[in-house]
Length: 238
Image 1 (cartoon, rainbow, N blue to C red):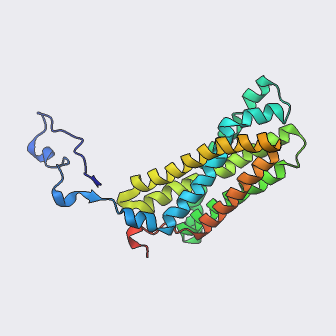
Image 2 (image 1 turned 60 degrees about the vertical axis):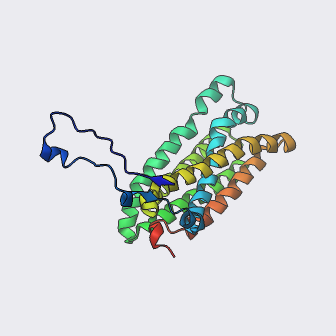
Image 3 (image 1 turned 180 degrees about the vertical axis):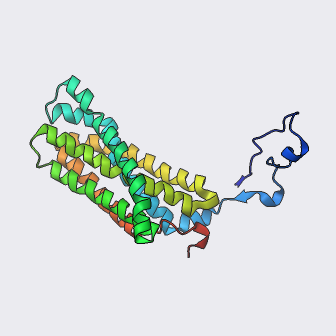
């Protein structure tokens, strides 16, 4: 598959010759870029990035599918309260993404290694999410439980900036393809989550078991983060 550099700017009649010379031109045959599919599919970093994103999206989709039902049936909130509280994980998750976007560069400068910063923040987010999901089963107060679940979303979304920036550094010219593959794996995780959570609860009548499964996936996400190389360009990886 070939992806040309598109000429998105057409010269206007009032553009002079000097200005026109600075505009993008149609690519020559040599300038066409071929996606290195074999290198993509054999890269451990690519698979690790896809793995952690699968776990992240698996958890995220619970917030936008089953969380309101959980608030109603397990925590005893009424419909109005559930509708209001259902947005808490999304709001707090956004804060987690902003926090990670701020702390990773600062931590990278302090450590002198942005790769360690991305791995550390990503692994910490996955570990925090797993620990909170296990702890929720012991929390009796419904409001404290909502806070804990919102913090799961904070931990979940704190992994996002590291994953996105890793795609840019690792992908290079293939960044769009790499991110597309990673995002596709995330969507598969969300698809599986929406079905799996429902069946787990239906078969076992145990919402905590659904949380434990998600925590187990987060544990896999920890490994993915610690094992990946989120900075070395794909063409330089061995």
